[in-house]
Image (cartoon, rainbow, N blue to C red):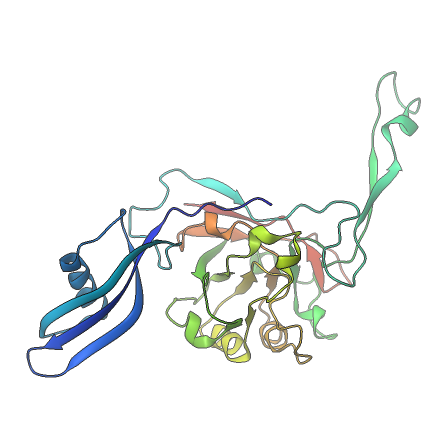
Length: 302
């Protein structure tokens, strides 16, 4: 299976801080993004003080420090983003006969009219192919709109193009998380107001493998409520379902779609994106009577 190489470095450490006016602060297994391949204890101490906005610090002791290779979790500093605009494809391939979702039929791609069958209909050596596709609407990388959950709400054709095109976007890095639940606390540090929020759990490259379906992370009820309250305009994930499929209430779908926030599932290549500073596009065909549809999603890096 293809993988997304990660070269970012982070530092994992414990710390013990004492203050000149008394008291102290300790942290265990703390992690921070770093530039380059290493950071001194002195520099790391200054980093913590600035990052936590601490006053009247007396001493900072760094313990059990280790440099690890792990995707950065925070937005890049100004000027650190790509200097040339480029497009990142965020869509999985859809191929005839390949199952996309357990229990749902695989797509079938065939010819309505093949090149050979069209021969003689036009001028000599002029042929055309007209294809035919039979598939459920959640195949591949797909978008859900309110009608997917609520029968009296907007279907794919009713949604304005502004709901899923040219959106300011952020990636929330969740790779290496313990457990499966993406809670409000796990995502609360990111400003999501007016933005498409893409949840990177580090699983997009597993598409097509059994591991893609096992132990899938999911957005919790309070996580979905947080995104609504904070003003997210679209939510995407690099997994097959944003909900825990063992929960029949489907709270993430129910809460987000009730608020008119589209959901994109099966996003690959999120590790290829910066944490911020890009535009996201996930526009489906303008088709009525349906609540979800495959998309060709992409990001434009600024």
